[in-house]
Image (cartoon, rainbow, N blue to C red; front, side):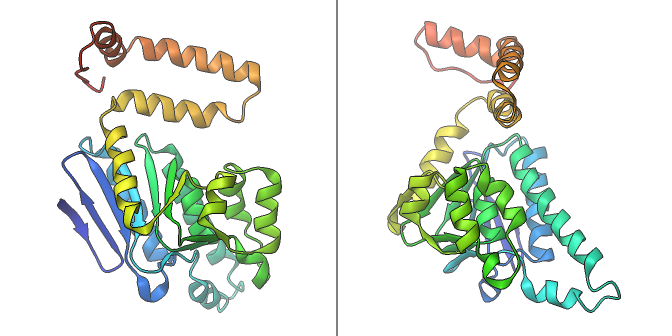
Length: 269
């Protein structure tokens, strides 16, 4: 692996397949999404958008906690401000919301690799990713209700992944759920043994990295745009997307390769 950037709390590296791995590395703070952590993740994701060598992003973490969510000590300190922290709280929530939307709007597929506990905004981070794989020992929760702070922003991502009943169960009880249940309700794609997690995630990333990047960009953007449309609106929109996609060089190349039973030579155009 060619290491791109390392700092105290976030490690990043890109391999020869164009797979960009971000590793949360602040175990002493349970990989909390502090302002600094969010800024580092945001910068890495921004880099993934502009760097043409990067084809897939993996978000993982060191230690027993994938991420505990917002740094409650930071938020508590903000209460010392004259407005009791209102402006600071808004700044932090906006920063987090922008980060989650960057994942969704990133033209590169983003995969969460979870080996540990993902709670509150940490669970939101997992839910915001396009795909998610977890070790069977991992657990997930939106536990804000237990401390008088409903997980309203994590709710946005979670409720767009799983059904209303399952979302409300997590949000109202705050209970931890197992990786097996997370898979069953659709919060993650697959729960695997810890020893197989990196291999499972890497296999998915490598498979995706071999696709046309322009096709992935078109498809990912279309998926998230159509999902909240009415049926007729979605079909009208998707039909136009298909037409524009058909006019791309890679669609012409891919179809020709399929007909001639050869491997496509993607130009990412």
